[in-house]
Length: 163
Image (tube, rainbow, N blue to C red):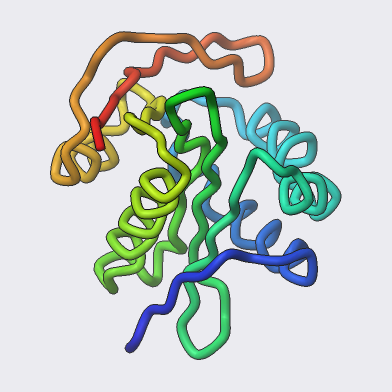
């Protein structure tokens, strides 16, 4: 299977939202309340929100595709001299297909292209699989932050990579 990665456009919003609804729960700790996960998806990962993200001049949404179907995505947000890798998810059926690595490389390439010095992200402290992936791609833990999921405060590591 050949994975291709390119910037998504507004015609992709519904498909991105579908992938997001399947993949976001995978990054949540087992203790997370399914109702809070569903509310987060509805409020932040809907087709309407992706329409907004895709039109925002400070963001890029990259879509990983196999045979034209979106199987993963990443969203990066431009800062002053840094880029936040805000979201990066791949459908479970495609873990190990190279999509995550291709998305990461495309994000790093975009960040370098716009002149960023660093890329940073937040990852749940209990998500060891994602942490291993990010370390493999040169990210190191530089701090912590909190992430609110419903009324629950989750703890994230902040990881950074210099370009």
